[in-house]
Image 1: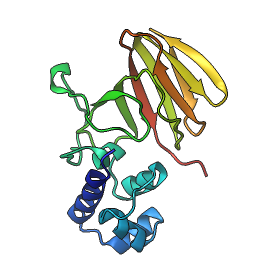
Image 2: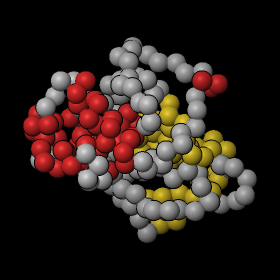
Image 3: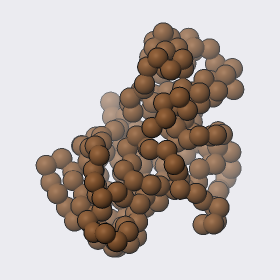
Amino acid sequence: MDEKIISINIKRFRKKKDMTLKTLAEKSGLTKGYISKIENFQKIPSYPTLLKIAQALKTEITSLIEKDSEEGKDLKYYISKRNNRKLSDLPHPFLEGSYEILAEEKSGKNMESFILYPDKKIKKMVSHFGEKLIYMIEGSVEFIYGDETLLLEQGDHIYFDAQIPHGSKRVSDISAKAMVVLYYYKRH
C-alpha cells in the first residue's frame, strides 16, 4: 500500500472540510500529534486507525487509499457501467488480490462493495470491525476463517463477523472472481 497517498488524502479531505488537526483528533479519538505524523509521512496508520479517520471525515476508507481519489457524490443512487470500472493498482488493507470498487463515487455509504480477483496465496490474515459477505461469481477459493478452512465455489457465499481473522486464496490456476460487501460498524 502506498502510505504517501493515504497521508496526502487524509490531509486533503481534512482541509477540504475546513477541519483542524485538533478537530479531527477529537472526532477520531486519536491525538493531534499522531494525526500530524500520519499526514507528514512519519507514521503508517493501521486499518483500525484508518477506519477512525475515515469515519471522522465522513468518508469511505477507499477514498483515503485510492490514488487521485475524490470524495463521493451525494446521490440517491449510483449506476456504474461495467466498462467504466477499472482494476485498482493499490493494495487494499483487507482485500487480497486485484479488485474493482463498486459505487465508488457514491458518498454516505454504509457498505463498501468490490469485485475481487483473489491471489493464489494469502499474504496476511485480516480482521476488522463489521461484517463481510463474499459471493463467488466464478472459480473457487479456499477461505480460512479463524481455525476453519472452507472451500467456496461458484454460486457459494459466506456472511461472517469480520473481527475473526480471515483470508482467502484461489485454489486453481484458473481465475476466480467474487463480489465482496463490507459493512463497517464498531461493537460497543
